[in-house]
Image (tube, rainbow, N blue to C red; front, side, top):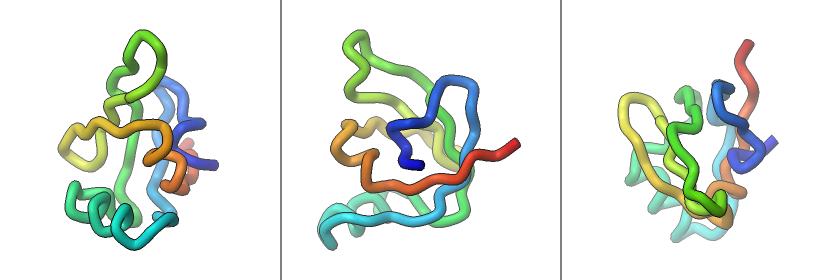
Length: 75
């Protein structure tokens, strides 16, 4: 499952980051690291972009970027 499939009130753990090298480096620089918990903090009116809580910070990602982040739901 990718990050764009995550619904409100669900928590997931980052499994992998795919995509072009430049995008992967940017996401890592923003703090998107394998193993961190992630949840949806807010969604724009049209659903794109979304704000995610990753670790102890919030970042805003477009669906195109979030689609490259593979996550695993936490129970």
